Image (cartoon, rainbow, N blue to C red; front, side, top):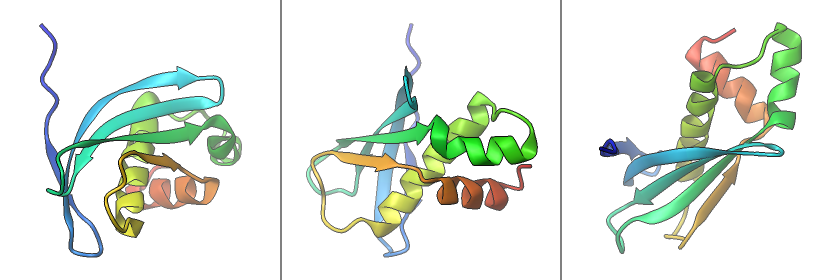
Length: 114
């Protein structure tokens, strides 16, 4: 029996409250894509994809001499989604986010991961 996704909430810097579900991820040639459904109460849930490219992880991994774990990569995707929601205006039909190397650094520092 498949697990029911847990609904989570996030209050963006704008004060807008988003609900979202994590649906899973797919490995791609460039890295991974993490799939979510998001809603701010305007028109139901909409798909969102967060790309975590290997090329954006590489600077951190090379400096620290280790690969990031799957859990750490998910954390980067989730907090990358939060950052995108902070910047979001309107209600796009589909949200696609690519986490930059600078955002990877910022997220991992915020989480105290080294």
